[in-house]
Image (cartoon, rainbow, N blue to C red; front, side, top):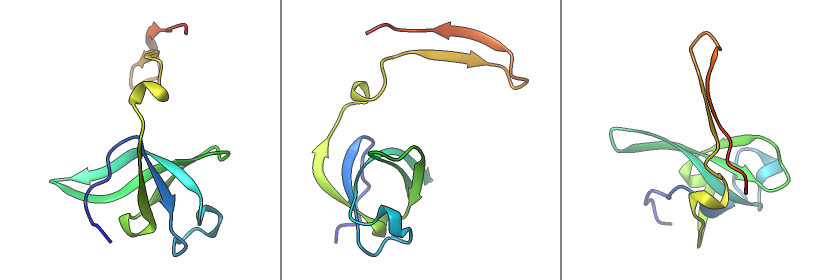
Length: 95
């Protein structure tokens, strides 16, 4: 098994040995990477049909080779909020 870093928006298969049984053998997309000083500690994955982002270790997922682009998931809309929760900016893009 390769231990290379998996890129954002890569499709992965959750391995049968995953700690969360409900995720096993499901396809997912890498939406987040927990990394510090070049060390990857885990990945945030989005599983189709499931609402949450799930944290998994590198040994729990295997890349399928399929990669998507950021634009496939985000249309460029954004908001700005102060630490106190005050809305400072709204930028809504229409498709």
